[in-house]
Length: 146
Image (cartoon, rainbow, N blue to C red; front, side, top):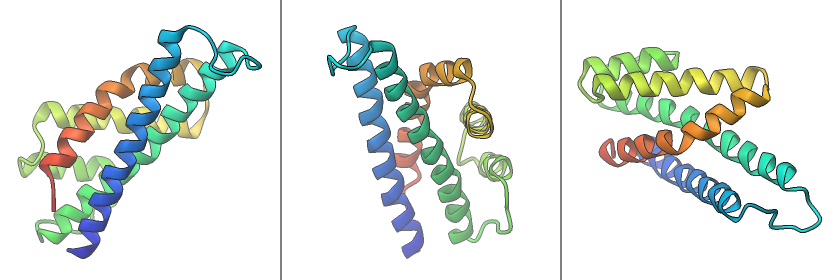
């Protein structure tokens, strides 16, 4: 149980850093020019965008591991090894709705696409979806407290 609480605290912390990165990127976009006059706007934008993507990657990684641990502590299921198994089991136990499960599986697929090969268009598309992903992860982290 202690490990579960620690992972939940870590998850909340990562969600906070993801939120900060999303807000900074939005602020840069609204501003329409670089915060640093010595840096090109496009370069600075890519730096902020890549920060959002990276923070999303490690947040979704911790989320599925947290949920796996949550299921183990509840002694509902053990031995799950991959994220999709964990999400499907959480759905079958009604911890996640069908829509939430599909969205989390989409997040995991997106995360895998960015971490195995970096393609600018994929990073851009993902960065546009991450604020919505963040909202769902935040809601689930609150609901699935230890």
